[in-house]
Structures are given as structure tokens and as C-alpha cells.
Image (tube, rainbow, N blue to C red; front, side, top):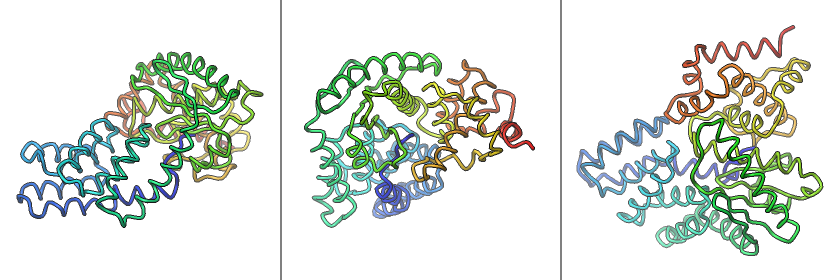
Length: 375
């Protein structure tokens, strides 16, 4: 499962990034008319979800007005929606250098830092923002959550190598951390060979007690792990079921690698289906179970994450995802999975991306429906 922002925080973040974009545009009112017009056009494109167009508009405008804070913020927001988090952070920092009171830029920069695993930067960013906006309740609540997480991690030990950083607590988890390093290393190269690329950024893994995991992530009870920029896993009982520990770890590693290689336009069913493919789940068996129950879930209903689903609904969503991903890989071949991801990262929807393989997405989905729901 891919853990998104904690539900109430994510709702707030969406309102900051999407619902209030026009506020930043309005801050250019006193600037040159051309810069103001460009900002309005760029934020309008962002509100429509057209990150590529917004990025192009802001880039052109910044060539003429390189220090305009609203344009820098807009360019950072567009880069974030494109999955270019390093560029987004650079642009947002520049916006705050030009105008430290631009709370929207602070809000987004803090969220990016947190989900890139830089908790210290996230906390520092929000602390600074609150000196300019002391009455911002959402910032203050989020900061309190992060400080609590930092206090928890302060007592953890770290097990590091060149590619992975694993945080854990206690001697029992030390053994699991050592095992995790071996499992992650082997899975990384195996997954990378199929995807055709190997992410270069370090990947963080945090091993929690069950309670710590629920408190930090807000994940549903049925969740066995999560990825929100860092791999987070509850490890109660893991020493007695190392096979499951390895499977969940590999599953979440797949999410981490997919985020690095194709950070946008990845529907949840494909993200989860690929993670299940690499963790050793049997997608064909999922198809047989769906056929036995004569249940088919349209993939359009599985585009978003599954964290809001109940246990039974989530189980069905994962079965459908595993079946659909297995069928897609079988049809296009494992050698072409990397090409599919490249097209998604290039801005295509999955509906568009499959057409390079000689079929339409509608045809593919009809074939799935016939296999599991035929009378």
C-alpha cells in the first residue's frame, strides 16, 4: 500500500496547493502587467491540473522576471505536480528568499521536504513560516505532528549502507534491520532490471511498533506497511514471519522506485499491481479468484489510493490491481514495462501510453472484464 499524507493533513495540503493558488497570483498585482498576466495564466493552468503548460508559462515569465516570488512559487508548484521535487524545492526556496512571507511557498516546501525524508528541513521551514504567519493553525498543527515524529525517531538507531538508511528501535529490530538491508539490496537490482533504471537517491526505511506505525501514518488497520517518501513498516511479529516481512519490504521498495522513476500519471491500480508483481504475489491467481466470484472493478475506480477503503474493499482493490497489472505485463512483455513508465513520466496518461503497444486501454479493460465476469 502507498501511504499518502495523513488524511486530514492531506485535505489541508490540497486546499493550500490547489484551492488557494489564486492568492499567490494576486500578489503580483503591483508588478508589471506582463508578469501579472503570466502568473494568472500559470495558476489557471495549475488549477486545471495542466502542470506541463503551467511549467512552460512560468519558465517563460521567469526569463523576464527572474526574482518575482509569485512566479517562482508557481514554477515550484508546477514542478511538484510534474514529480520534479528537487527542482520544486529549489524554486520554492528562491520564492521565499525573495518574499519570506509567502506562506503558500513555505507550506509546499515543508510538505515536499517531509515526503523526501528531510524531517529537519520540514520542521525548520514551518518554524520560519510561523514567524510571519503566527495565527496559521494548519501550519502549527502540522509542525506539532512533525516535532512529535522527530522526538520519536530521536531514540532510534540507524543502519546505513550506500543505498539504504534503516531506522529502528531495540536489539530485536537490529536483526530485522540487518536482514532488511540484504533483502532490499537484492530486490533493488531485480526490480531495476525489469524497469530498466535504478534510482540514485538514498531510500529511507523506518521500522516501528504497530502502535507507532498507526500513530505516525494514520494508516488503516489492514495496512501492513506504507511508502510516503519513506518506507514505513510495523514489525510486530515480523521475526516469526520473515517471509511476510520480506514480501512487504519488497512491495514498499517497488513503490519507492516507481516514485523515483515515474512520479506522475501513475494510477493506483498500476502502482499497487506492479508492487504485487515484484513482491511475488500471483496476479493470475487473483484473476481466478475474481472470476470465481464473478466480480470486476472498473480500473477508473482504482485510480486513487486505497487508504480510505475498508478492509473488504481494499482486499478487492488489491486483487483487481494484481490481476490487471499481471495481464498488462503479459500483454506488453516485461521488457516494455520501462517504456510504459517513461511515457507516464513524460506526461501521458496510462490510456495513452498503452497505445504504443498496438491496443487501446478500452480494449484492454474489456478483455479483463470478459475474463472475470463472463456468465
